[in-house]
Image (cartoon, rainbow, N blue to C red):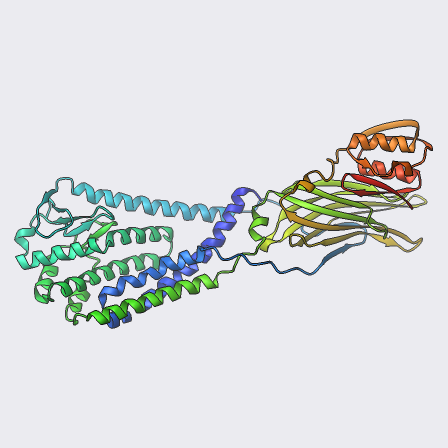
Length: 522
C-alpha cells in the first residue's frame, strides 16, 4: 500500500464517521430549534447550532491512550505438499475508489468555496461607489450605497461595516431608520458575519449533504429572529414600526455569504409573527442560556465518549517505518538453535536459510508491516527440502502470515513429519515483532549477503573462522571444532547455511545468537 492509498483509506474512515456525526447533530438541532425558541425565546436560538461544530471537534479530539489487551498465542502449522498461501494478492487492477472519493470530496469543497468567494466579491464590487456617512450612536462604520437594492446589511466577518440603501432616508421614517440601524448593529455586535463564514465553511466541507444547505438557511433565519428579539427588548418593543420597516425593505438581488442582509430567504412571515410574542424576562433568558449550554455540552461530550480510545501501540505501529523482529528457530523437533534480532524496514524482506544434518535444508524470508487495530503482520515465504533417500525428495513451499501485538510472540511451524521412515522435516519460527529499532536490533545480525568461499584440505576450525570473519560473525567456541581437513565450495550461499554445513561435517550443531555462533555436540 503506497502513501496515497494509506491517506485515502484514513480519509474515508474519518469522512464517513464525521458525516454521520454531522447528520445526527444537525438533525437534532433542526428538531429542537422551534420548540426551544418557544420556550426560551428567539435570542438564544443560534446558540443551539454550536452543537454541530462542537460535536465534530469532539469526534476528532484525542483520547487518553489506553493499554492494548493481549492476544492469545498465535500458532500457525503448515504441513503437506504443494504450495500454501494464506493471503494471495488480488490479481488485476483494482479501482482505487477511496482515492477517487477523496479527490471528488476535496474538488467539490474547493468548487463551493470558490463560488462563495466569487459571490462575496460580486457583492463588494457593487459597493465600490458607496460613501461613508455619520450616524449618531453607531459604533460600526456606516456606508450609503449608490443603489437602492443593496442593504440594509452588515457586511464582513471581522471588520464589519453597515451598508444602507441609497434611498434609506426617504423610504423609512426616523423611527424605522433607528430600528434598522439597531438591527444591523446587533448583527455586528453578535459577530453573526463571522458565524456565517464558519457555517459556509462547514457547508462547503459537506457540500454533497442536503442537510448542510438546509441547516445553513435555518441558521440565517435563527440569527435574524435573534436580532429582532434583541432590538425589541432594547428599544421598548416598538412592534408596529418594526413590522413596517420589514415590509418596506426590498430583498437583495445578490447573495452575501459573509454578512447579514435582508434577503428573500429570510422568514418575513415568521419574523412578523414573532413580534407578537412577549419579551422574555432576564431570568428567563438566563435559564434559557443555561439550558441550551447544557444541551450543547452534553451532546458534545456524548460524541467524545462514543469515539474509540486509541490503543497504546496503535499509532506507533501505524506510523513507524522500521520494526524489530526477534526470531528463534528450531528444526526437526530440536531445541532452538538460531536466535536473531533484526531491524527491518517496513515491507523489506529479511532472508534466512539453514539446514540440520544431511538431507534437510530450508530457506525463505520474512517481511514486517503494520496491520489493523494496532497489530503487526509478519509474512513469510518459506521452502523446505527433505531428502528421504532412494531419489525421493519431499519439497514444500508456503507463504504463512501471522498477526500479533507488539512484543507478543507468534509461532509458525512449517514442514511435515514423514512416518516411513520417521523423519521430522519441520522448522519452528518463534516471531516477536515490535515497532521501531533499538541499538540491539541495529547491531544484532550482519546482512545475510550470499558469499563465495572455497578451500581444499583445510581444517574445519580454520574454515569456520575464515567464514565467520568474512560474514561478520563471532565464534564463541571455535576450539570445539576439530582440525580435520575438509574441502568445500560455497557459491552464493548464505553465511548461516555455510556455517551450519561446516558444523555438520564435524558432527556438531551451529547455534546462532545474533552475531555469535556456538558449536554444540549433536
